[in-house]
Image (cartoon, rainbow, N blue to C red):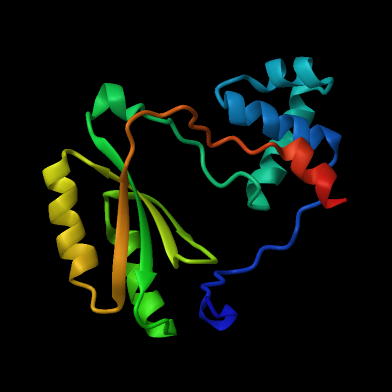
Length: 174
């Protein structure tokens, strides 16, 4: 995909994290319900220092949300489909319109612009195969800019995590 067609969103400056910041973020990713005191006891800081650091991490965008991760197998039986999308015409307008459509699609839980044979990768949750088919026809087939899309229905989930390995990522960046 040509570089000028990529959506760049607002650029955030790289945040310099010290050892305690990384430990706090690692801990919060595993369990954000822990008290500041418990986190501090675990990593060797006072509760007030942990509270102050978490406030700074939030204000600087390192922590973007505090959410509950719902297990769809328990709460909303559904199918997961990995969808790889190829565009016929790679234009800024086509990509922008597609991104707007995908942002509004409740069925799409993740969307990535990709390099290589496919332009986008989507993770789609649908209530049934029929629901997915109807969504794909109305959203993907109806888009004249899309040449084709490949759908891969997930048969089982081996691993799912929203946790980043901050310690390793930070160490590699140095």
